[in-house]
Length: 131
Image (tube, rainbow, N blue to C red; front, side, top):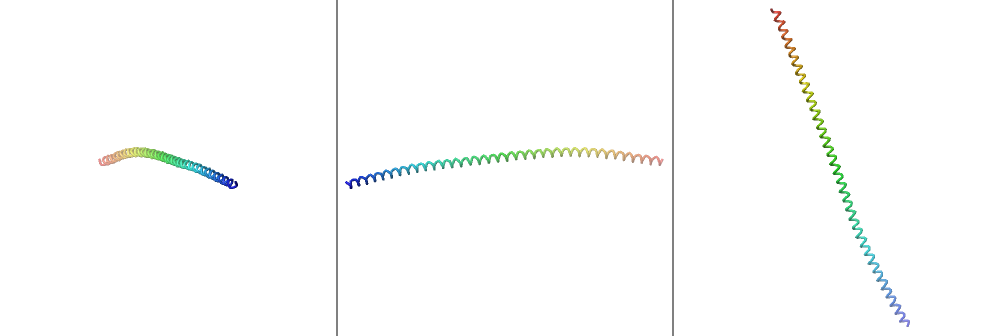
């Protein structure tokens, strides 16, 4: 009888051991499945963060390019305004120079006429004195 009881207990212990082992294996499989799922989620999250960083970087590059273009347009506009100003000043100076030269030429003509008149008077006075 004791041997039978021991055999039954031994068999029960073996069955319990097998049940515990099976439960532990199932728990480990479930845990591994959960770990795999978490790893996939983490990979997806990492990839999403990579894409978000790339999009943000591309946006920053586009903003920098846009700002550079705006600055370039402003510089071109400023240079064009300066060129227009220089042309205006140059035209004004040319006009003043022409007016000055015209006035100088008129002055010289008048001086030439006065000189001729003076010479003519001197010649006339000399002729009168000779006569």
